[in-house]
Image (tube, rainbow over all chains, first blue to last red; front, side):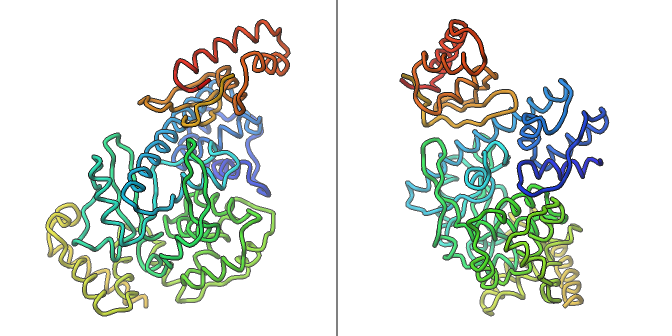
Length: 369
Length: 84
């Protein structure tokens, strides 16, 4: 088996219904190096550790020791991130800012049989758009620094996905106002994200994650819109949630339609079922298998799916066209074409180079419409 | 009777466990034996109860188990991971 095939098989560890075979004997030295590289890159160390512990993945003593060291290191990161999450939760609670926990920390503690299986590298939280600036003030006030400036004051609160900060301990906190950047992020029902919830416990404290339907849609967004090709851990999240008996297909389809993201959900499930070789057929996988994206869906998805270094400007142009109000379009265009000097210094260097790039991408997007 | 400090953050690992005790900057890595003690304390227990469980599970003499358990519990309590 090749390293990518083995990595996918490890990503399916303890996933009901996957037919991907694991190794039948310990790997050679070169195959082992390739596997470890893939596993660490895809954040699957916990799943490899589980496969070794249960005897499903045979290893030599040295290989086991290697994975044990990596597993202990990633577990250390996980508990430090959990502590950071609790700190930030206390800070936001103290400021009266409601929030939801997103992605890795929430999924590990709510969707997986053991949090040890699901690694994560940062903390992701969702707040209402109106609370984004206040949340940032709270975090910066406690010593965190913003990773990137925003193009113009108020841009992120109005159009962006969110803001990232780095704490003094080096850990990253991502505060989101929507689930993805670009046009798909603008069509999410933002108040609806706070309408339902799944509570969970960390260190004796109750935290709140997204409701079942919204959590699943977010996982689909992350898989399909996050990177091309999708990260295998993101596909595992989709499969893990799709196979949950509590997932309601009707709510999923209704919500996806309301968010204009049906193609995203269908594609995520199709790819998860294919890449993880899942034999089980559940309501959402049957629905996804029978879904064909329209040409409009394909154009919209293409904005996210080509990783050629022009993804961000392509998304920016697509976002501009998706804004319904003229006043929003003007404000967005102004921020993109005439950002602050601080932003420009960190991104493009000069207004002229930025304008040239914008025109080039605009032509490309127009040609594709 | 001892029990886990509910504020401890932890994960199982391939060869043990990792614990982050409140007030400590760095996580604590437990070896397999200490991790067994931690696992057994998902419910409050006395060291005698823990020793009996370990002796039965691993088919070892209860005296040997008792010595190991007492040492393990003592170490975890010293680190702040357990409360009485």
